[in-house]
Length: 404
Image (tube, rainbow, N blue to C red):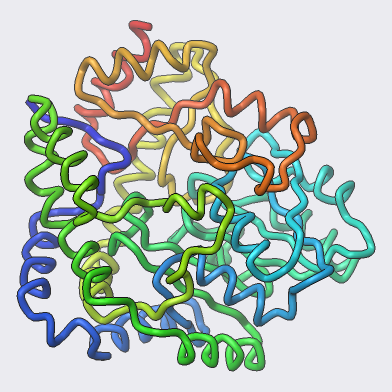
């Protein structure tokens, strides 16, 4: 019996496992530069920039904000309905996160963004939620009016296009994430880009001054891909879940968000370079980006047609979304998740907490309860569906939703 899992490394295919195993057995290659240069050239070619790479998307975000001159005394607007690592990245520069509500696409609401602007507002982080571009035309008019910097958070949106422009090339800078459940994955890793040469130079200094991760940290990420090839087939029997928990407790597998980050504290090894070992995984994933995106968009359109017939409320889609996940809005959130799990379908919970994941220290996040009512309502009702699946698998998911 197969398992459909939205969050357990859904991008990994057999060739990725073989690649991970190969580099795993060649530790002398872990900190070379060959594959990093290949990844760097890919971003140069596709995003017309000089990219810099870090151990995570969140550290890339802190590096970019710092390079843009954001620090103590500044305010950075970001949307509610996000992950704790985003306000953390702001706070680690010394700046203060200020939350704006969301629109019907689960992206930042331009009107509420403008209401949250003060004399101390230096920048806005525009998160392209689930791969759907935010309303960039309106946002760019607002920032030009108030002279505010725009950082695009493309953690969900590599490959998305807004009115003919690649998402990530519209604002003053952008970050991408290569996490285990993102568009493309090397388990951990991130990239920062900017259109400005002086900012790019500052980013390169931060990148070069950052230490390499430890051998054990690289081991954890490489072993993750290998372990998932065993865990996922065994998951329906229950053995896979036990094995996953066991490996995490032994700390041979990393967790997406560490305990210090949940508490709002900067981890000891936060700003690190992106190692060649993970770049080796990423370059293989980049070769699949067009295929993955095409599948996600086709399944997204199929969901729209079939769920609309069943009068299921959907998140608004805009432009050429990367369709990382497909959002539905329902009062039966818990029932759908439970029924899906009983049928070996693990649906997504982005973002069931207003600042996710559940367990994050909300006092450290800076979020004020009641300040973003639309985001709070959506957190109670959102269910996200996988998109890099077959139509037959999508039919199974649709049937589960309809039965509830």
